[in-house]
Length: 175
Image (tube, rainbow, N blue to C red; front, side, top):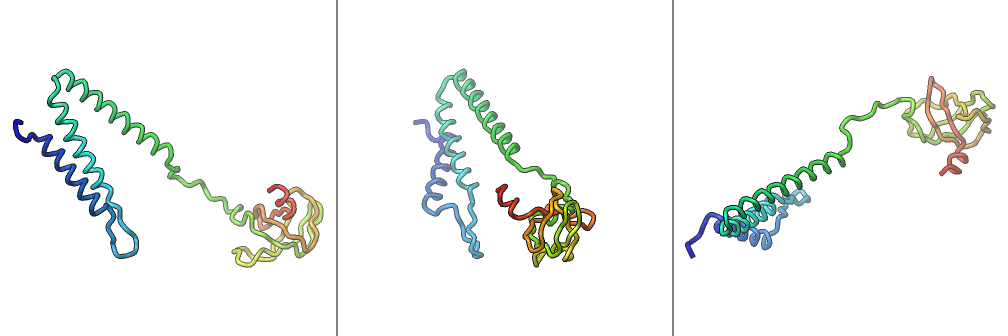
């Protein structure tokens, strides 16, 4: 044995850090009830161990085998990092938020018809408590049909101070 080389020291450091992590764990308690996972130590331990092992093995190889294995490993790591970047980029939600259309702010809010809605005409609906719109509000049927007084409806949109509504029974049939 020619003594310890740099790769042997790196490998030993990685193994010792791995053993420390196995004994003490990677979670640390901050005190606010949420543990903090420090995965960078586990990644460092794995990287040190791998680098030390590969270095110790490859130093004993011929220069051509060492060079080809280093190029192969470098290409594999580049491919893996590129694939990780592409997957993370493809899976990330878009940063921009689509423009909010205030006409659809109350879409799906239930309401009660307090004055019947005639065919292609206006009536009145009382929006459910808790909605931010003034109530009662003028209402029309989405499809132009008549809706009787006392029937439950769902708001589709509010356009020009008029709520366009649909009978709840029609909405339930669609679901």
